[in-house]
Length: 290
Ligand SMILES: Nc1ncnc2c1ncn2[C@@H]1O[C@H](COP(=O)(O)OP(=O)(O)OP(=O)(O)O)[C@@H](O)[C@H]1O
Ligand SMILES: [Mg+2]
Image (cartoon, rainbow, N blue to C red; front, side):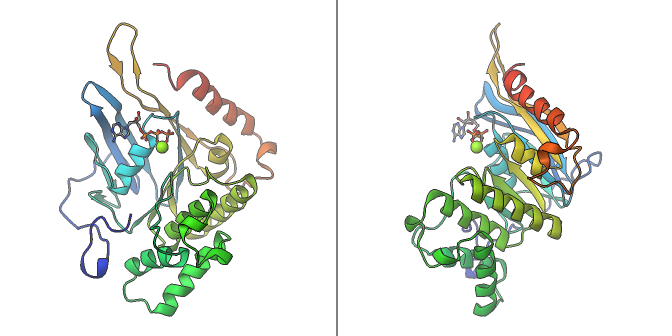
């Protein structure tokens, strides 16, 4: 994940290059404009996906399996290219991977020959090449502790459970303090208790640091807890009379619940059930219908 493009000392950077200007009628730190992806020309996975995310905003995307959520996240990460459309972050077109964006993959992407400490240190060193060993260790240990993995810090990924490996990925993404976090179902492999703890930690870090986050989740409650806005995506599908309708962005739901919400009181807040029902109804009856 950290080695797609490198210059001296293995530092991963996005080459600054002249880019098309983002259209001025969309605000946002991150802008996605008319994005489409096709693996087969006559059957685009999705088409004309546009949205923007403001700095410090937490946006979740929900949609059934196969609608293209990971594909969009990979394009935002600079790891995949779209068939059409453009993505901009901080005014520059996304053209490759960058340490300005921290990614947590759906299945962890750790280097199997390195320990937890070394996996995270590698990223931290790439981000801050001039840091001393002590500074790097301090940063690594802080974020390993955050995800509760201090006892496993010198273990290799093969010695960890799936949930533990996922937590290493989370710690690594946070440890480089990126301008934007891109999270692909980061808590999917975690047990309920750990999941809750890390959700709380994530919320607290994000609020403190004004972190901008784009996160994929299948968990409606998780989206309601964390997100300021929730993007609802439809799947592509064959049409009855022939032809194919690509998937796309069906709706952007603004979370009306107070930002100070916590997991414990979520269910008691005015508007919670309405919001939840709206999203569940979408998934049950509209996400696959055109
Ligand atoms: N390399 C590829 N070649 C061909 N088809 C692909 C490729 N990668 C993804 N797809 C297809 O693109 C579609 C979108 O995949 P993607 O992984 O983005 O979905 P997703 O919304 O993240 O699903 P999930 O919720 O299961 O993770 C799927 O139908 C998938 O089969
Ligand atoms: Mg996916």
